[in-house]
Structures are given as C-alpha cells and as structure tokens.
Image 1 (cartoon, rainbow, N blue to C red):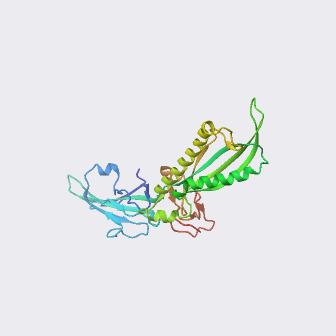
Image 2 (cartoon, rainbow, N blue to C red):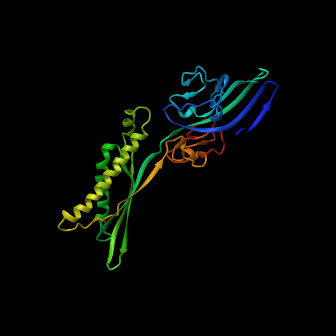
Image 3 (cartoon, rainbow, N blue to C red):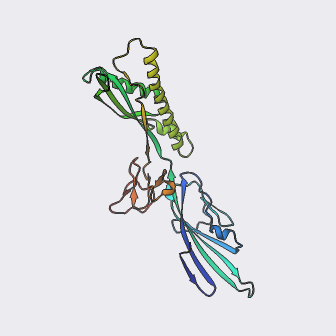
Length: 307
C-alpha cells in the first residue's frame, strides 16, 4: 500500500494509494477519513490534519465543508464543479519509549471525488397487430390513432411517445395461411413538454421522480395491451380487422445521461451504472451515455458540455 518513503533525521513522509469516491449531486459526501484502516486502529499522538481541495486551497473554514477535529471531511451540497482531488496530510508524532525522542511522521491521503447522477430511464416498446393486408389504407390511420391513445394514457405523467414507427410484414406460420402483421415500435420518454416545471417542484434534483413517472407510464401501457387480449376474447363478437397479437408486447430498458455526465464501467467500475461527471478533457453535449474526448483538450473543468 505504501508507494514510497522518504526518511529524514526526525521526519518520515508516506504516500498512499488514491481512493475513488462517488457523491450524488446536491447531496453531502460521506466523511472522508484522513488515515487508513490500520492507522485508525492505533494510537496517534498529536495529530494535525491539512485538507486541500481540487483548487489547491486549504479547506479549513470553507462554508461548504464540515471538517471535524479528528480530521474527517464532508463536502456538503455536492456539485459537478466540486469534483476532483481532495488530499489530506496527516502529521503525528512517534515517541521512542526508551529515549523519548520525538519523530514527526507525515502521511498523505488522496481521494478522487466525483459527482454523479442516476441515469434517466426510458423504455423501448415493441408490439404487433394482425391486419388484413399490408396495403390497407387503414393501417396508417390505425397507427396514428394508437399513438394518440397511448399519449393520452400517460400525458398526466409528463411522459410521451417518441421515435414511433411501424412496418407491415407477411407471416407464414405452421398449419396456417399467409398472415399480415404490423410491427409497431416506440419509445416511452419522460421528457414531455412541461417536465421541467414538474422538476422544479422537487427539491434538489429530480431523476428519482422522473424515473418513477416513466416507470408508471410503462406500466400503464403494459396494462393497456393486456386489456386488448381480454377484450378480444370476451367483448368482441366479430374480431376487428386490425387487432393486437396476444403476448407480442415486449419492453427494453434504455438509459441516458444528462449533458456533462456519462457512463464508463472501466474508469468507474465501482459506479458502473451511474452517470458520472465528465472529467477534464472530455465532454457530453447531449443525453448520450458516454463522455466524448476533446480533440484539442482545452476543457480543464469537470462536467463540460462542449470543448
């Protein structure tokens, strides 16, 4: 664990490994402890602690930190711009029992602290409908009406249907003649007009609320298609020309990140599902899930949305 040692007549300096810490935006960080586990189990004589933030300044007395007398640091109301290296130098004395000679020891601890957000969820839905023929003019009308119905079901959740499409295919099944089916796909998205106003009603950040809303929308749409199966079996004497194919409803979970954040399960393997703030030299201008590398790395801040 010790990387290098420097010995002087009365001083010893140790350098320790770096620890990655992930803090959800607008929350308080966990306490960062200015000693390792082994040192915490030992007696420490005359300890002093010096915490330096990412900007190179002493953190003592800063309004946004909670710094205890035992050297523990909490960063409060964490923002993307607060990300970076937090280093602590612990100095303490070792006293020889026989000679009472005092030796001062310095130990450095480094924490790379990253802001993160929960990923924004959306759902890609695939469903099929039987139709009489692929050239039927009613196919397009049916598709447009279906979108209206689904949007009405979820509009109060400030969710909407996007990236919708359909295609007609001819199907040959064993022991059946040639059938025609509409393959319909669409995305259930939580960012319908008005979503930002709803977010402002939620303290701090609203990913949790947004994700709950889109999950509710997905469940409502699933229930809608389940009811189609029941209606076909119990409510229609004559089967409609275009009707739902039983058990064809399927859903795929899609994640996206806010601008300035991205996923990297190699660099941030301990927070692989998180949208972690883009590091200096990288940026994310949109809702993709990765931070892009700047071709000319002028960006020196965390959370950049452009180069």
